[in-house]
Image 1 (spheres, rainbow, N blue to C red):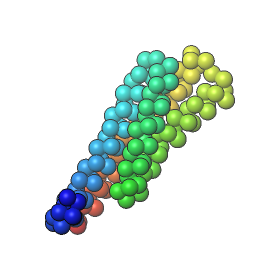
Image 2 (cartoon, rainbow, N blue to C red):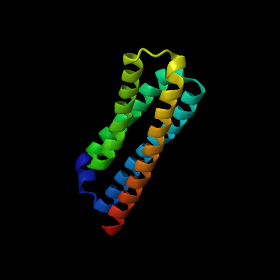
Image 3 (cartoon, rainbow, N blue to C red):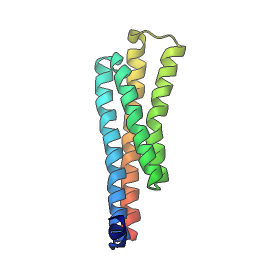
Image 4 (tube, rainbow, N blue to C red):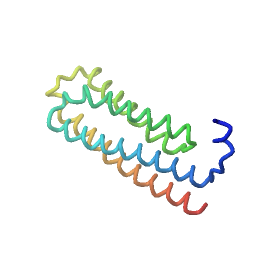
Amino acid sequence: MQEILDELPVEENEISIKHKRIVIGGMLVLGGFGALATVLAIDDIETIIGTGPIGSLIGLVVYIVARKLHFPEQQKIGLSAPIFSAVCFLIIFCLDWSPGEAQTPISILIALYTFMLGVAILVEIVRIRRRFVRH
């Protein structure tokens, strides 16, 4: 069966378009989850106990997919989520902050990260689209 499938003509452009959509979709999921996590953190900082690991997992999936599909710039976007979560954890842990003490500074950091993530995602989507329009 695999031999028959291997012999079918598959245009490289179709594969590239599919890869492009997968990477863009992953980045958009990460950005959307970042926006949700920001709103939740502003309301109740303790939600980062759940949103941090989930966001990190989404980021790692984006990183792995981007790496496999040869999108090096998007790998950085994916890795930013677990790195950011680790930084927030270390700040809270090292400063021994209570939830009340962490509420404002960490919420501000999360909002800034999410804004910068959104800008980076937008820039990369434009870059991907330009890259595939030329080819």
